[in-house]
Image (cartoon, rainbow, N blue to C red; front, top):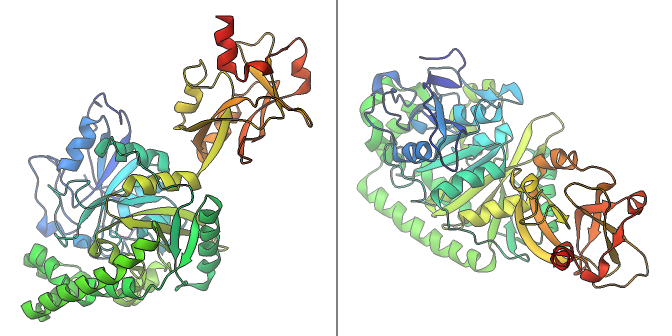
Length: 505
């Protein structure tokens, strides 16, 4: 059943959720990905068919306990970064209805950003899983090739297509990622190296890109200014070269039924010859060799996801040229066999969102997610009942917090066993001039969106302040009001809550 809302193509009757790591989470499916018994249209009704089985990626999510609720609108045959090339109505940014949603995974991004689902599937060939994320203030993951199966996905460019995932938080995105790669736990080292480029795009976006560079430096990144030219040349090959002929090979039989702009693009593929295709492959190999040296000097590349955002009316008036601008920072990623993660990066003075993308060689998906967590999390030092195995630890884990390390405070802290608390809790107090052993703490990384609800659970006399760690760094952590020390027992000599509990046992 088609909804009046242009975000949705059809509803799916929700099935009973299976037990699994994604139990009860809802998701939407871009309408070039099969769901058994529901038509796949690719935003071209004449091409619609009803699959007998789910796409493999959908089946995997259902088996993990997620619940599918609908198929979403898209740029026809996944050709476009705008979200307007569809007979079902143009999608718009959730921030301003006059502006484009981005595409081609337009409906999936809007469904997530508007809170209608927890996450959504899109596809990404030229940036379709990243540009809509930027224009709606959410996360968009473009996986490494082979990470998510494309079996049951209508191809655009079969050699470049990836299934992508949108989510409102990096925590949710990590949960989906772990459903496909449970054992990937590596991360970039704390003093990682990142590349950035001279900004090209709307000048109003440049300060937000500069702020993103500074944020990456603040979490340990060492910046390196890079020459973007070889990446730009690779991006140009995607639509100015014979790869557009791969779209014709996939869906050319529907040319007479296509949206005028899509027909113009895909129909133009007939001008390319086999010689052109081979020459383009040779040129791409050259660019790969040129950029290979870049990755010897950096771990990750930080780019604007899109340098511009346009009104729907502007895109309708100048469809191809403006779409080309939107792919300036995204088109090269699939051609060069890289993975990418689009993340929110602030709001412009006019209220529109801006986003940046982390890009790395294939296989670094988990590393990109971990780095995004560093940018979007609060580190919390816990000292007592919230430690691993203690009764309140679930207040951390239920909010997606992740254990970063076990360490000690600086030596000027005292620890007290508080009286009349349930469950038993310690109080941490800093005293200038005191020199003790330092107190054992665990540092947990918590999504910033969950921090407020965590703090709200903390009863007096405890509160959250800034705790100085043994290495001189700081984290948010539990501190105790002086009034709470009445009748408390000092246990500093034990060096930590666990040691004190063990002595009582």
